[in-house]
Image 1: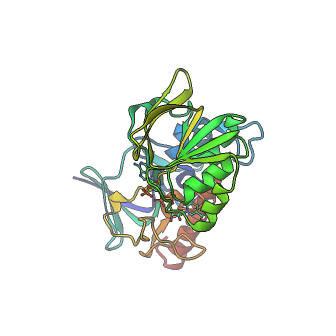
Image 2 (image 1 turned 90 degrees about the vertical axis):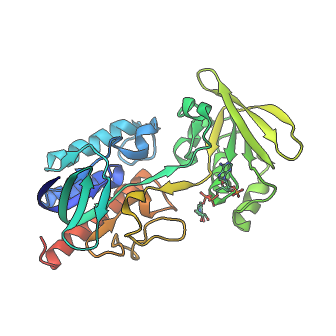
Image 3 (image 1 turned 180 degrees about the vertical axis):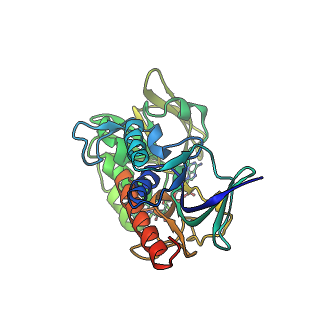
Length: 312
Ligand code: NDP
């Protein structure tokens, strides 16, 4: 086992939240050490065009945006390790973070491990990722002007995304596996009252089909067993997100859906000296810009905490 010096700040995760916290904390001379993960950059690495990140009037690709952020963090002295953290011990200070047998210690930690959209598990879903299959209507909806799309799911996200997509698409199907929605009544009413939305109850997608892009989905009505091919150009998955918290092994307090709890208007977690930002603690906004904003908050909170507790 190898053991390093005690760092001032370790950042775990490398999406917009992690990189922004690295930019701010390295400019504050904390010389952060970031564990980027083997697939660095987070969810934006699987996004093509990003049109809603301020400062890019012509749009920017997700990987390009992440590359810019990484270079900006590097410029001010962030050090990177492109590995997945495998274990942590936050029970005493300095905090301990492992990558396999290598142990790292730090006075403060920022957690920015993000959340992953849940997928149905169909091979075709992966094959058509960014070619008609998306898990974010806010990000990709505008590419589906005058097209027919489907949203899969029956929760608030599905209602919200379906309603949002009617701004662009000429028709939006909500494909739901049961005969009732779990979404809140107000959001269901809004969706059901929209003339562009049609609900396909008790229905599942068996496979998504297409050539270069999605052209349809084979669906089955579970009640009638009827199967058919639905013509579509887009499929939006809205079946929930999974915050990436497994590595923390229950050491940080979460809400009932597994997202890390942070104190109101701050990035403080249940353990003093451990801060959280981005989608791992946000199930509501889930945008690159809000994640980046919360990364800035986490860096400022960590810096002030280190200063105040004379740990810095
Ligand atoms: P939810 O877990 O609430 O809903 C997921 C939906 O996907 C359910 O309808 C579920 O079906 C369906 N589903 C899950 N797995 C599959 C599968 N394998 N195949 C087909 N369907 C599946 O997730 P949401 O993202 O909708 O919401 C998460 C949280 O965020 C909730 O607390 C929600 O209230 C909140 N939220 C609030 C918003 C707001 O207030 N503006 C907006 C968006 C989210 P079934 O019902 O059968 O289990």
